[in-house]
Structure formats: C-alpha cells, structure tokens
Length: 199
Image (tube, rainbow, N blue to C red; front, side):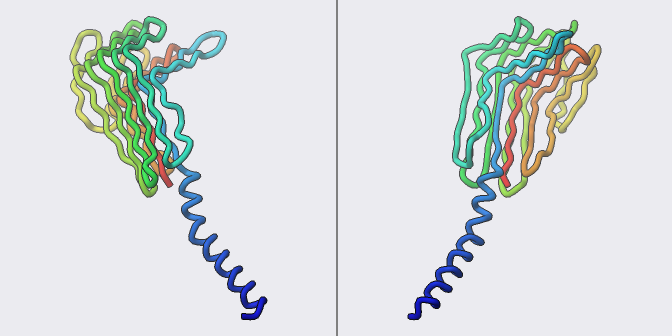
C-alpha cells in the first residue's frame, strides 16, 4: 500500500476515534456528587461562619466514591445529632448521593426543631436527576409537623421558614435538601443534603 494511503487511513481512524471518544470524555468531565449531614452558614457582624457535619466533599471523577460519618455531631451547641453519615458514589454512568442523621435537635432564634430521622437521596444519569427525602418525628417547638412528602413544603417559623424535602434541579441532576431552615440575618442551615449530576 502506498505510504500516502496509509497516512490518510491513519488520519481518518484518528478522527473517527476522536469523534467516538469525545462524548465519553465530555461525560466524565461533567460529573458531580456530594453529600453532607449538615451544612450551615451562621451570619455575624464581622463575617459569616461556615460549618458542616459528615461532608463527603465533591467527587473527583465518574468512578470516585466518598463517605463521611461520625458517632455523633455537635455544631456550636445549637445543633445536636446522632450518627451523621454521608456517601457519594460515581458508578461510571451515573451518580448517587445520600446523607442522613438521627435524633436531630436544632435551636435557632427561639425555635426548637427536632426529628427522629432525616435523610436525603439524589441520583443522576444521562442528564436526568431525581431524589427523595425522609423525615420522621419532625417537631417544631414540641408540636408535630405533618410532612406531606411533596417537594418544597414550606413551614413558617419566627423570622424565617423551613423547607421540607427541598428539591432543586441542577445542570444534569438534582439537589435534595431534606430540611432547609433559614432565619433572616441569623443562620441558614441545611440538614441532610445530597447532590448528584451526570452529563
């Protein structure tokens, strides 16, 4: 075979391989997953304080796996929890994240919020995300709160609100916050957060 013909065929094969592999490479570059039992921002006159509990950090790639856990958790004495745990897993062609804690006791701006179990789950594959959350025994100032199971259920509290089963679509995925408590000018607390995206 003539050297020029060989060169042309090699060039065509290289181009074909680049076209076939480029979506795979692109896919791997658009993977994200993270979970945390708690993520909180406390607002102050001299700046904000960022706190977390059992935070996996972000996945580094499509087959990365991360977990974080502890026997118990305590954030500034204002949030107590048992067995905070979080996992984020890249499965090659999808991502799954989960965060949970038990025996929640949160005191924020005069409101006492408790729950027996708080859990958030998020999954993503082929650019589509989904998620769920579980809250059992949720109480506000000693009064049981009826959890409907619907996404983004809002309950007012003094100076702010709490959102139950908060679901926010992200690029190629979903963020699920089992319980998101915000008191204006005081603190923003997310309890049980899971993020998954895969494009």
